[in-house]
Length: 69
Image 1 (cartoon, rainbow, N blue to C red):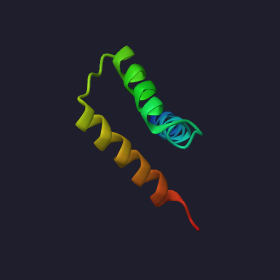
Image 2 (spheres, rainbow, N blue to C red; image 1 turned 90 degrees about the vertical axis):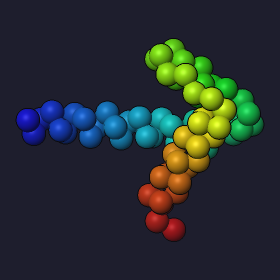
Image 3 (cartoon, rainbow, N blue to C red; image 1 turned 135 degrees about the horizontal axis):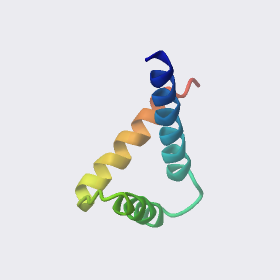
Image 4 (cartoon, one colour; image 1 turned 60 degrees about the vertical axis):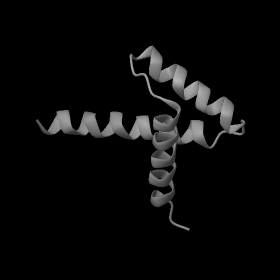
């Protein structure tokens, strides 16, 4: 079981890292949000604009909370 939790932590960290990388990439926010929508739709997740905005804000807050400056 411990090995499974380590794998889950790694996958979760990789997902958060990828999300943070997308959010902080030097592209316009509109284009980035479209890319996030497309990636989610490929996985069968459909969000309304307001739901996507909340998700992006939550990810940004989570990554900002992890910074130590």
